[in-house]
Image (cartoon, rainbow, N blue to C red):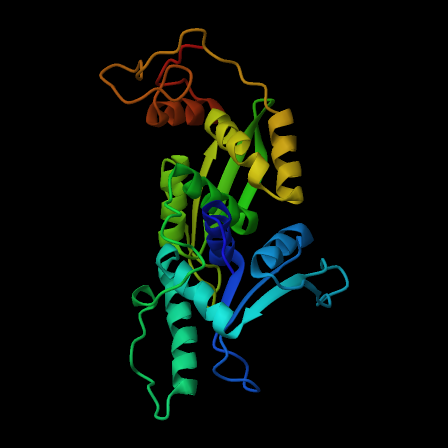
Length: 287
């Protein structure tokens, strides 16, 4: 199994969001498994082609649920994929990969090696050959894969106008932070769990012209459902642009980059909140 760079990084994005790395079931321990399960059949079919495996239709848990689909790779090919993907994954997934690979070593060893450490980075894989150097397109490919599972493409309406919103939310802070840097989100927000058993959720979002820019950039790499959501968000967006926008914020004493209406992000949000609450704006925009 050899995967080109663009597809490989798309696959690592999907695996980060929707993948599972397992040591194998009790009936067949020590046989590592990589699986992807989603309700988007076209996405699972794309993963299956990269795995060179079939797509299996699963039973719905509830009558009103969507039908899930799954593709799985096991044994030595799964280990090879884990080794290749390991250095591109987040902290949580790397720990899962190490446990899965360690289980194979445990099974093949004549003595138990539990408690030892297997570093996939020190092992070799031919899935992604050395000449497949990554560039900026690989980051876009990874982001597209991640957003297939963990992204939202929508619109928000303010004062009768619709603005596109791209958002990613996960329980893995390191992955959301990486996505946030790529799309240029102003911050990563933290949502505390409502119940003790739930995990903290991290989110990053961009909207308006920035959201529209990334939606257009990602569109051709997304599956059917996400493409339809992007098209709907862009169709509702009718921006009003300054003829000659300034390079920096026009607020007195501020030299931050221009974001919109002649203001930087901080002063734009200050003006927007004042307007939304019916207060006299503390900052005057250009339009």
